[in-house]
Image: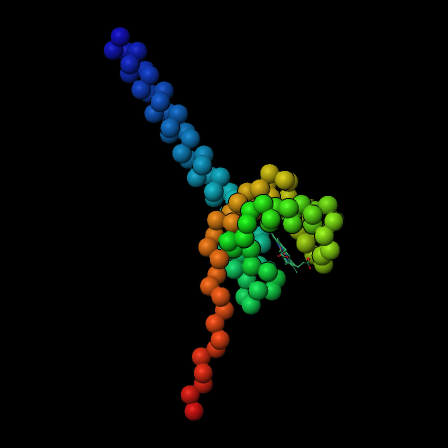
Length: 116
Ligand code: HEC
């Protein structure tokens, strides 16, 4: 009786212990995939001056659809066709999930007035 209870507890603890690192690994994997986009779209998808467009904080489904359209060649692009083709749909899911969860950059402010 006591043994059964202990065994049951162990199974629950084990299951919890396995699930948590898996989620953390997914998040780390998603960020490492997204990092390939930082070169052009800015760190965490916040691009300088909005060129190319910032990805941070954009709607996940919209981003995913745009990338799938790039991948299929349905949306005009200079280089995004090649970029999008390098990823499976599952990887694009992770990447767009990452960017949609990043807080968007604050709107650009006008440069401070110069002192004379
Ligand atoms: C070499 C630079 C470069 C890299 C790397 C890059 N992009 Fe782009 N991205 C662009 C440019 C330039 C555009 C404008 C479309 C075009 O000319 O291809 C663009 C457009 C986009 C758009 C459309 C934005 C809009 O609102 O119209 C999305 C979404 C996007 N990129 C996502 C990504 C993702 C996700 C990655 C990483 C997997 C990535 N890009 C990697 C340069 C890049």
